[in-house]
Length: 252
Length: 335
Image (cartoon, rainbow over all chains, first blue to last red; front, side, top):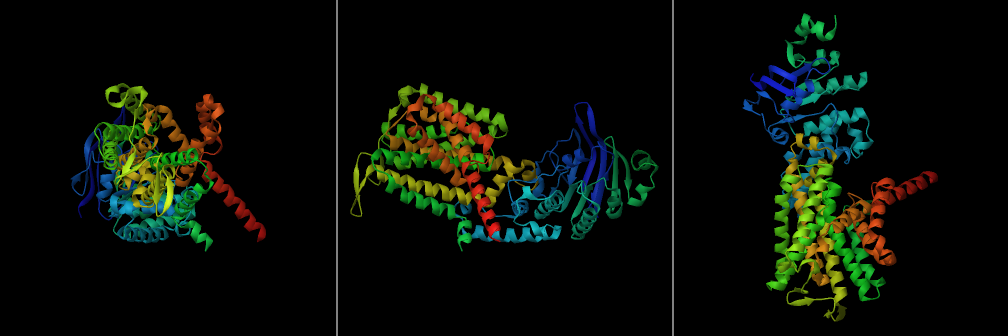
């Protein structure tokens, strides 16, 4: 298998603080790949670098073998990368369904003229988009919220809604930043099932997560970072038994 | 049945058409017709501005600049170069759209107060230019504008016309023309909102980051809506110039920009019918309270403040929510 995401010598400094330092790793296609580390280790910074929200100070990031540094987030979405956020980014001025339909932005073919005159091709496109979005909402377990305003939804439902929106773009890889944060154990178990189902569809899942039970349970590969550097990398089994990881993070 | 009717996407448009058809029955003299026409002109302008402010969440404190540019382009070209009014106002709108595109590219990267300041400055530059280039624009004294001739008809508020055997005064003809323009403007705005483009615009308001990671080219959409709203303003500025027959740089001034924004905020950001209501209220109120003319600006400021504090969603959406709640309660009481 070839590497879907390849990171080499990645560096990000905010003034004098090195949030990410000399980090290299690669994510194989089809994996569930987890990034773990203590608070402030640079996990979210790493996600922001990969998804184009930050520009690296040094190093390179490749998606499917192509360099993606300095490419804006919306262009990365076109290349099949989508993400969710630790601080959820939901459009609260829209309904739940509209949020997911927004995820299909790139799949829609309408142009300015068909929009202004509301031509039949636009209506058909929209109807397909709507059906697809409803299907996805059911897939992630938000089927009851279709016409609900996003601002009226619960935290747990919004978390799943954000995943649905990311999937709507038909990505090759989704990056999920702490999807289980703030969820109770039942919701976490549901999320775990959902992530397995997503991976089973051939979508690569990159995860930042604190819930060790879930990480150990579903990951194919785990990267541990601390102070912006790689601490360890390997299968859940290897990570569990790594003395450095135990000392820095898992607690001995 | 009633529910499906009220929830249809064009129900608001139908209601608007009915109101526009009925209003003349309550108007008695040319002055009242002219006021109604003015309401329609401002309403169409703020329907365009609302796309930018209410839906895409971007502020413009210089929109009267675009209104003024359209007005002066029509005024100068038709009076000094004898251009035909209709092609002129279309060409003017295209030029203003181009200016908005060029100006919008850099300034729409700014957010919040900074965007407010940049658009404010843009408005001032246009205003000052119109004031200073007296050889072309007549300077602060303003300039006269020929009537609007359509297919050889000279549409003037002083004439009367016969249409299908009926006598129609010039004022009434203007009212109908602008009524049609408002309906058209609302229809186009509604089509834009109920579409993937509209969804992208609202997502820029809701969460710009979320929009960008699902592939929305946010700078492009912000610029698009800025251009569209500028074109609305320019077209209405041109028609305003022909309608009034005389314009001054004040129509492009800062106060005018603030009034446009106040119309949007008071009526209800993101509510097309709401902003029309806002436009009607703020156009007619100064007429009703003509005695307090000296305090007009203070009053607008007060209205803006009170709206923001007590009904941040605007007059119409707040009233709608109130009525819906009452009806809901009634239904519950019955059950």
